[in-house]
Length: 128
Image (cartoon, rainbow, N blue to C red; front, top):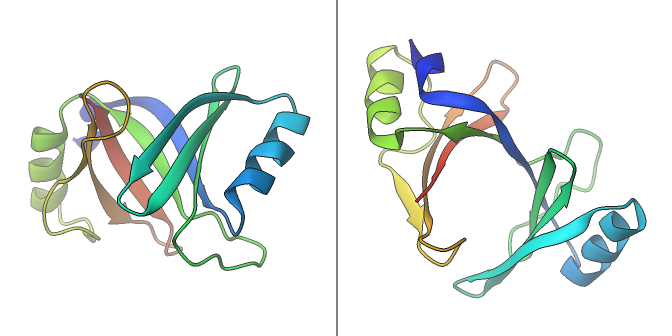
């Protein structure tokens, strides 16, 4: 069962038309910047309030309409085994391999995404 590989929600991903403006908005709600990172030509900020984490970044198109959250990420404990399990259970895979971003946090992240029944992306993300 895929649920044995995650412990709860890790973050919600929201692309930004203007990253500085987005950071300012979330700060006005009481969020703090938990981390800022580069990913190629994109910039990313993780905004934290209590146990809620928002990942926001520039460089990807924004839907600019209701329901425009890009993805929900769960905190994955073993991304390799979770990937195998998701494929074996027949989930609609949005990634054909495990992705990585080495510039995030201290040692990078590894992740993959599946698609939910409403076209929502669910990311299984392991902080390395």
